[in-house]
Amino acid sequence: MRICLIASSRYPITEPFAGGLESMTHTMARGLSERGHEVTLFAGPGSTSHPSVRVLPLATVELSAAALADVNAPHPEWIADHHAYLDLMLTLSRTGTDDYDVVHNNSLHHLPVAMASALDVPLLTTLHTPPLPMLESALALSPRPGRFVAVSGWTADAWRHVVDSEVVLNGLDLRDWPPGEGGGPAVWSGRIVPEKAPHLAIEACRAAGVPLVLAGPVQDQEYFRREVAPRLGQRARYAGHLDGQALSALLRRSSVAVVTPVWDEPYGLVAAEAMASGTPVAAFARGGLAQVVAPEAGVLAAPGDVDALTHAVASAVQLDRGAVRAHAEATCSADRMIARYLDLYADLGRQQDAA
Image 1 (cartoon, rainbow, N blue to C red):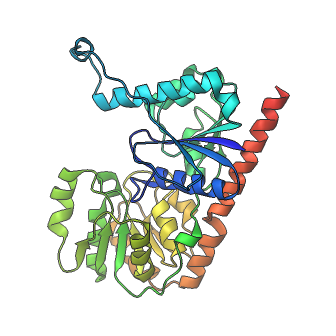
Image 2: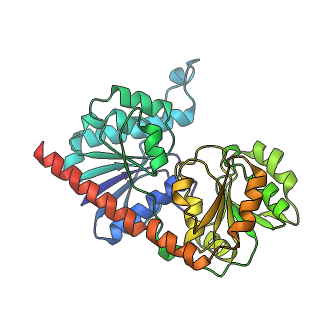
Image 3: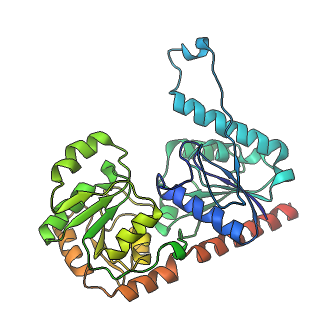
């Protein structure tokens, strides 16, 4: 098949990934290419992928001084995103059927959904987040917004008031996440932002008497300065934003992975990465994590309850790492995810032919 994958125009699909959406899109692009499909990727500058994946250049615009002087002019990043997605969707509306059999939208931008009815090629959108205002607006106005997939049952339920979606759990290329022996410190990984609350992981691990290593991009410097940095020391250290190999090595030697969302996590890719490494998870039961983390692979605590999380850390360390890996193989593999998406692509093609 000829597949166009749409990701963020702002963040590149390259390691170290900005977040789970970028990681999942990379896994899709590589997996589809390895299975012989022709993949084109729309993503931020500097994106890299499988050698056979074609990366689309982003359209850019230089606005006039008069336009930029408008007191109501949007932020330059907003304008850049808008222009890049508008160019892509207009191009797809003109020549999409010449180049592609399906368009798979992994972005959070509203234009792919708002302009879906302008395309003659079928469009599938994966919902990676809780409901967003601009996407709800696009859905309210688009007569044919395409078909939708959610990354967890929780996410599907969260969007059900505006759109129905099928559930396809995110997946990992398990070759990249081999199991390890554990025995080391606890680990917290992800975007360092308030809604991920790594400072609560530090508190829980300190109370449990377990050293902790944090890894991930600092996307909110003020939060890091205020809540995370003062809690670092001999028992909790920050390892930086690690690429896949370094993060995998850290997870393999970790005794437990601590996941501390104070928002409703749509899926929880960091939990899947830990479980694939054989590392059990101790997490707040928010959003999709309750579907991703099974009792044999981790221990869930009441949301926001640091005392309960402390006990979850101590309990999760005792779980069998072989059973944790087996759960990941059964539920978190890229093979399962890609096979399901290929079924959906084929179904969309049949519907298109019948229309």
